[in-house]
Every structure is written in C-alpha cells, then in structure tokens.
Image (cartoon, rainbow, N blue to C red; front, side, top):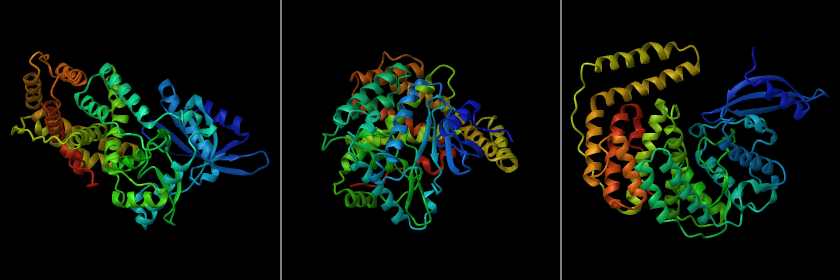
Length: 455
C-alpha cells in the first residue's frame, strides 16, 4: 500500500530520529488542512516507539510558520524543561519545518466529550490543566517564540485589533467585522495581571481523555500565545456553540478552585467576541483573494453564517443597543425548485448511503448543504440583496449602487466612525437575519445557537 507520508518528510523523520518507519496508518491530522498518520518507529536496537505524525498542506504559506514555531515551542517546553508543570501533552519527538510537521509520542484517548462517562469530573480535570498552564512562568526561555512576557495583555490586544482592521479593509472590507472590531477597540479591558501562557483554542474537541474521565493530553496548540487568562475560558464558550460542554457556571467554579483567581464574566464576554474575530478576519481575507476556494463549502457557509450572527448579537448585547428583526418577504419558489428537491433527495437516499468511503460520504453531505443554500438563494436572494442595498443607500446616499461595493463602503465608514454606530449595527443585524434564513435548512440548531447566560 502506498504511503500517505510525503517521501521527503519520511526521509527527514528517519534521519532525525535514527529510526525507520516500520508501519503506518493514516489518521485525521487535526484541522481542515492537516494530514496525519500513526507511525511505528523501529530503532537499530530493535526497540519500537508508537508515534503520531501530522503535517500541514499549507507548508508553502509563509504566514503559517509563526504558528508552527509557537506550537513546536510549547510542546517542546511542556514535554521537556517544563514537564514538572503537569500540563499533559503528547511528548514531542521531532519537528520538520519544511512540511510544518510535528512528530509526537502516541497518546491514546477520545476527543468526543459527549461520550465521557463522567462529564463533570472530566471538565474539572480539563479546567485544572488550563489553570496549571496559566501558572507557568511565561518568561521561561523555552517559551520565547510565544512573545514578550513583559508586554501587557491590553497592549497586545490593541495591536491585534488594529492589525485585523487593516487586514479586513485591505482585503474585502466587511461591515460586520469592522463593527465588531470598532467595539472591541473602544472597550479593551484593563489589565489585572501579567500575560500568561494560553492554549489559544481551549475547549471540547481539543483534548484527549481516557476511561478514567481524566485528560490524557491537550492537543491542537497552533494558536497558543501569551495573554489574559480569561481568553481560554472565553474560547471554551465559543467552542461550546458547536460542541456541547458542561455549563459555564461549572467551568468558572472549577477555574476559581484550581487557580485561586476570580472569574470576571464581563471580561469573558469581551474575549468571546475577540476570539471570534481572531479567526474570522484572517479567514475572510483568504476567502476574498482572487480565485480562492477558502470557505466555499457547505460547512464553510454554515459556520461562517453562525459566527456572523453570533458576533452581531454579541455587539448588540455588549453595547446595550436594541435591534429589531427585519421583515422577510414571502418569496415563492419558481420552476427551478423541483430540481433542487430532486438533487437533495438523490443525495440523501442514494448517494450518501452508497458512498464508498468516509471522505466521499462527507463530500456528499457538504454538497447537500450547498444545494440547500442555492435553493433558498434562488427564491429569496434577489429580494434580500435589493433590501440590503436600499438600507445601505438610505444610511449612506453616496454609497455605490451594487451590493458588494456598498458593503465595502459601509465597512469603511464604520472604520472611520462616519456613520452612527447603532444604525450600522441595525443594518448588520438585518443582513445576518437574512443570511441565516437562507442557510437555516442546512444549519439546523446552529441557526439559533447562543451562549448561556453568564450573569
């Protein structure tokens, strides 16, 4: 059977470890662009080590290198000089920058939190791991690639927000993102302590656990950085929009018990929005590039729509501004609707059940989401686009007379503080309400998912 591991990567692994890859089995790589394999290393003395090798299809993108360097640094530190900190990771065996590849000792475990026998005990242990991570001295030399530990979290937050605003304005300005960034920039929380080491994407799905309801390893460290400890708690809340976890009240209580630090709900709410912008702005910039296929999938539409809706609602609640739902016209399907219905029926009844492998089945389900999107766009898209354009031009009479350019003009006006914030928020709310309606059939519960009350 042909190897899934690139030949030059295999050669690098064997040269660096002094072992040969005696066996391999393809596994998920973690993340949309990663590939992985469980490998058995056989050393010259006959001993063997079971490992996991993950490599990234974005290795040719220089912007990915800092993420790789930070992930390599944190894994190396936690499985080496900072082992006594007690933060569980898969011990790092080697790293290979040419493929953004990491080789770690294999850690068995389940990453599906809903399958845990004792979710409360597991969640408490996971939060204890985060508290242990936050206690580490961020100035340790092994953590230098994560940044300057003396830099105040608030300063880093302001710099990131300014960078994200520039990135979005330069690559397809989006009024929803500019609105959220404007609020974040005006409401950066005051520092309550020095920067700590953060996981960066904490929450269900990003840790392995065993049958003992304890964490076996924290995984997916590519977003690790230094910052406010409330960021990691906020990430749990955001990930919980999609992947169920224990109530945030239990998360807060467990963190306070493990860390001895009080949790500030207002700070967590700020960082929920900040975290969403941290991945939404770069992904939007990539999607806007000419010829880009980033986000052009059923899943991309589904999650992108959900996050935009949640971001707009978050801004409204954080800013204390009431918005009203727009009236949605009753647009009847035209003669093309039966073709969408036929395609969906064929996908559901024939294609998905007959898919020869897991990848083909997943692709068919992706296509079904797109068909559902196209179906609603065919019946409602023109009316929705006309309504949004009319609203923008009513607020900004000089705005262009095509929707894409008008959206960009609105985004630029928000960034320049040239339109009333509440009025712009209402327009963004109208847009996400319409876009959610278009995607609702494909989104299911994600069309209405929201955070639990943090009081």
